[in-house]
Length: 620
Ligand SMILES: [Zn+2]
Image 1 (cartoon, rainbow, N blue to C red):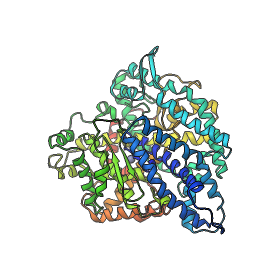
Image 2 (image 1 turned 90 degrees about the vertical axis):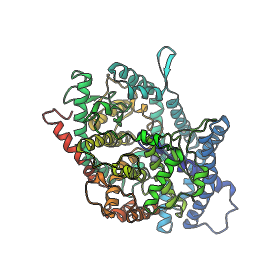
Image 3 (image 1 turned 30 degrees about the vertical axis):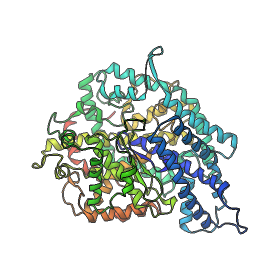
Image 4 (image 1 turned 60 degrees about the vertical axis):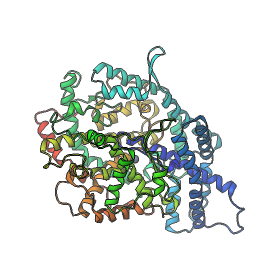
């Protein structure tokens, strides 16, 4: 089921949870169908809450198998028929979702075990846009959600009349590859202008989803989203702000350095000192990750580029061997071998004879050990990292397969994405040398280290303010603090505050620039990605400590360390069965998320940036 489909990491990272969120909805709804139609008549004695939860867990496990099968078949064999079957299933599930939650409401305040209490809470939070009870409004919300998604997917920018139309993928490619200011602006504006038509839909969706959230007992939808972290919503707001304040100085240093380099490229008149940077110059439609313009920002041009792509090709790495390499890593830390069915049923390479969704994803088919990945793997270093990332999801599934269905999830929604990324951090130059992909030389020099850290920072540090601000805007929209007539102005005010960027051309309330980012019309919470980026370094630090590693965090690989692996596996096995604070504590010895590990990791780069920024007018 799509519930359990996670997609690839950065740069696709943020696409990932979409399907998962949607599928989760699907599953929950399906539950209601089973409850309504497939069960034997109720016993005369009323069902207790614990019995109800036990029944949910069983029914989920049952229905998941069918949903996964439909979803997997569609994703690996796109035809009108598989699309129809999946769409039909989705519609039915969405319709009946609120019935499932309504049924759960009967047990509010009744005696039940703490585990059942937790399971029902997770059930309630399992949908990202709860529908109001009123059937007409419920139908309207479903139509709006599907419509916004369709409008986003169908958006095309046509420069001259209906000729020369380009979609999101093509416009994104311009942002990545062009270094021409006006060409970049044309693609940026062309894409952003397409979102205007979403504003009315979005405004209505906010009203309806808020109504649904209130019926579930939350102040508004933003408060509901923030309630998924085993702490009061307002406490979570503060916690997220605290985490951001830890990393903000590092981001501001990176932004200041990028500004200098972009000014050198495009001119001080276009990128003035001490001012926000035009948003279309970062190699990314949303300026969310900047690695596509590494060529403009490389600290020491040409120094020690590890050519891993060539090594993979020369050594004949095919998709199976790349996946074996990832499995070997996990086995080296005492994780179980992948089941034979993984190898028989996964799609590791792009088939020649049919259409498939190539976007990498990991699947938990049956709530047990039928786990798979779907990738069109090519022999590049980036894809090798993606395989290791996807196996992070797969191993989470395997470790928590003995949990009841409602606890088969990450400790909180930032954890699932963080696992494979944590393992990526162990793919150090020394590890790559050990598996024969780079020459085993003396330690790489400082210049090579700075280059490597810059490349990573353009993904991992540049993303932090973006990952934080998306939901900040939505929290204000859902709470009513930002009114519909101010949507766009508020969007840019928040982007400027966090990212230090500005729209490259004046924008007005005729525009709806938030709608140009998939997760806004796609109704996918985003804070999870921000948390995941902080958490993966914190987890890596704890694992390296467990491994007895001494030295700079950036040089630590836990490859081959069973002590670290056993602690890691024990954490994964907990799934969502207890508050994440307890789970985090068991691995790290602390109950708080903490950004000091990511700062520690990037300390060499931070020192270097401070040198580079001396005498510059930083800030905006
Ligand atoms: Zn992922």
